[in-house]
Image (cartoon, rainbow, N blue to C red; front, top):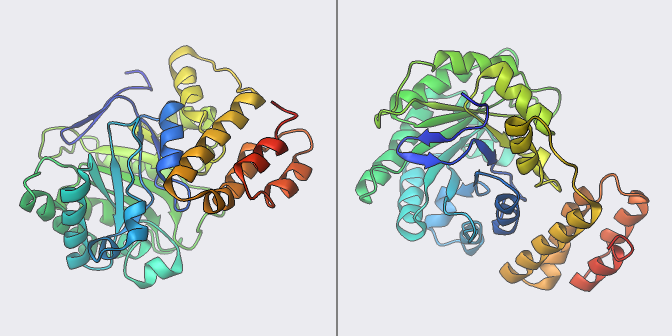
Length: 338
């Protein structure tokens, strides 16, 4: 089988195996639209608080705006108890008709862990089992039993407590259709290197396991995928079914088409500076549509700093970016490149 191929997540068919990961502060509608336009096969929302969403949080609902160019809509949720997961899942299914629900059991941020969510679930397999069961119950009670529920985990709490195997098996027993692993521990956060050997072990553990739909349990990898070559190496070395791009896609949504070309043609082309800038400006336009110019331009500062990496005079450009207040400000900053 080619390294680039379609995947079945339960009953859901996805045309390819290159995904935008759920990234807090990045994976909003604007960025998902841009990534889809540049080759992402499916984009995940930022993680959404299951409790906040069913209690009517406008901020949480904004995270669930759908990119119009993507027929698939993967929603990631987090929660610290079964009731929150059930109620939040039910609300999202009824109002937003997602293509799948993914449970975050990997976020290492302290405030998420304190609520009993994120990485706390990787070290509590029994609780993770109950969370997955709650989400699956929501799919059945909202008359959408075929909606796949998936989970994202970490390798464990720290190097002395690697619980990925127990967490993955608990999620499988509860009925997940796919498991994504970021093979770093909670203690590592985003430091050090992700251990792809753990991803390879997870793939091997699940090579003969099937979902209730009859499709195999899909295993996706995340962590240290910053180039098309990294993605190719992950697929070759671990035999995982697909790759999730997170930090590697920031300011570089072109990585999806480039990876696709590398996997199918053996090479890829670099992206022109003009295309990078115009893509960033398009992302800003969508952000403005979803909020207002002032808020969008502030949000876009960190993103344009990523787009501008490697530009001539990039340090001076970054100084101008962090002061940009309007769409026209950004156009002026990059006018010499356009």
